[in-house]
Image 1 (cartoon, rainbow, N blue to C red):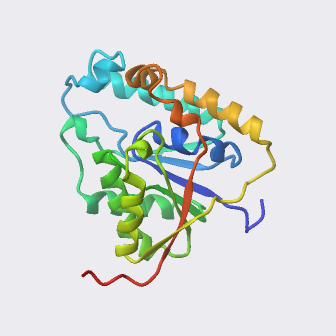
Image 2: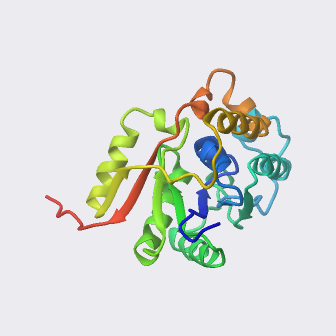
Length: 235
């Protein structure tokens, strides 16, 4: 692998977000690192509506089985799982933005990544918090090529993408439509096949979304290259 070949580090709020949103890209980049931020179970077992929809009896079972699903999906795509010890908002014990930012920065430095993909933080509270953490470290890690990805399903929220692009501009972050170059040659149909196989590994989450409510994960993936520009003055 040449020094100019992208070595991907994808920040995934939950176990499935990177594959749902970037699975075709991952198929073209073997050995990409997928870092799941909210990968820990709650300290005390509990029951949530989402976990119940997914078919789980309790939160501990949910996190355990979702980890297994994630391992299967990332194996299909030859990706490397990295997991952070944080709990998502449904478990009522979310970390601070600064805690996530510090942990992400440390984890990134332990890899050989030269290209980082972060969620745009669309619609979902957990996604928005991960977006904020990434924005905190972006100006300090300008040696990386940064991209934002539109989160599948959540990007369908009317106006969500447009609002985020306007927000990035206010922060002085320039967003340009672009996709990281492929790590190795693989045809589009093969990428789509591998992504579909990986997506299907998340059986519990597809069950929770329900039939007909997750087709967007198979639509065209969209990315924005991010660079630090001049912050706009607020009126």
